[in-house]
Image (cartoon, rainbow, N blue to C red; front, side, top):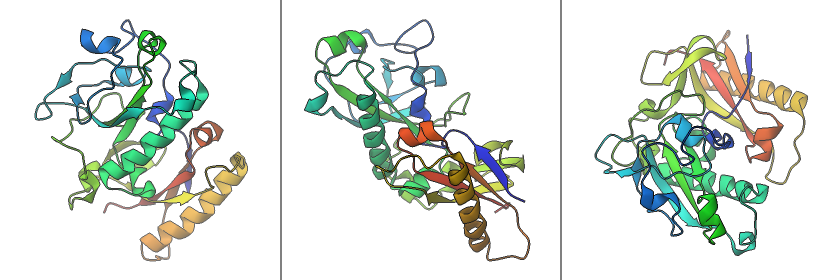
Length: 267
């Protein structure tokens, strides 16, 4: 029987939670030199970020040597397009552009296609300058890969470098599986650990400029595709269970056009 799941993307939509919270507006263990920095951050820098840090629009957490314990690594930095020079700090067009840019760079950095990048335990977040730096003309963005998803209450440590991580032979440590009676009632675990479900394929539901087709269409299309796709992945057994994760209008507006298919399997 299928188990339908609605929710936030397994990987690339952790960035949706950008509302500020906590006592420090730029995260834990901040570096005063980074707080209102106008110059763009360093590519490849590592940090010990927490889920609370990731929920903030800007971050000035101190960097650490990448050979030390860390949960985040900066995989892309740059300057926003000139068309955004006069944009407000929380302009939706800035967020949309950064979401698309970081999602594409995330795939390139890990060595994954769009489907594989949605089936990893890793995700990404983007940060902008502080409001003061923005007022001073700073228009940089920073994309960090993090050791978890937006469902995570804590993050796992990352290797010295995550570049090309999903091109390596031992991928299961970084791919997402689930352990429980159903996809939506389970604990997400690395596929290298005991599990009952594995995210095996994704379905593309539209092109970047397509309008959201509606909940009913998205769920029905996802269910039908995942039934066939998981059956093929399992080798067309007579009886099998599958699950699917589909996403609603907010995630569509953020750029996600895919649903995730799960196979019930211990492999």
